[in-house]
Image (tube, rainbow, N blue to C red; front, side):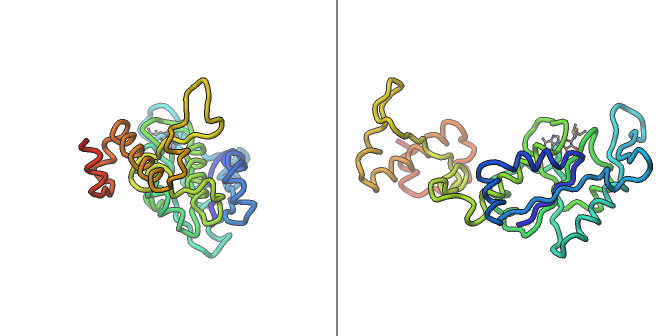
Length: 239
Ligand code: SAM
């Protein structure tokens, strides 16, 4: 998959994406990142990309024309049409389900705002969707773009090694993941639950499922309303 980053600091996103699973996905040719700086497409000696907001008030607004020129250059670079996402605190919250849908698209373009954001007319004309990474305000869209890149990169076929399989992760089956343990078996901080050492695959699977149910009920009961639960799950939760 191809992801284009439109940002005043595109190298920031590329750096975040250089490590671990996302770095490996790029090495394996599963993901290519392309940075585009609107300043390179701005006119005039100062290569200005922002101006004061009409109506007054604090801050600056990213101007239409440098962004339009950047989006056009970005789109002309490859025939595949890019699904354009504006990272914004006003967007729909990113979920694992949305990350899966985005991960299946051949090409994304992530538009990162700065200052007070982007001129609304550009958003209306060229943005396909707005995504938020949470109910707080960042100073720029770059960290949010790096979050989207990470969430979709690890879902590319072949990005994860078996040991890191995404299928058991939180939200994949509507529940939070179960707790995990590794060596040593005995430690001053506590013991590993016996069942995990038993070698009984059925018992281990049942314990993990029940731990997931318990954790979800304790930490995110809202998820249980839409999680696909079987009769055994319902019986366990009623106990
Ligand atoms: N004035 C805007 C508002 O209140 O909705 C906030 C602008 S913010 C200081 C600058 C940029 O950071 C935004 O244009 C957006 O690209 C990015 N940003 C800030 N918070 C974000 C969030 N929670 N999720 C995604 N992007 C965010």
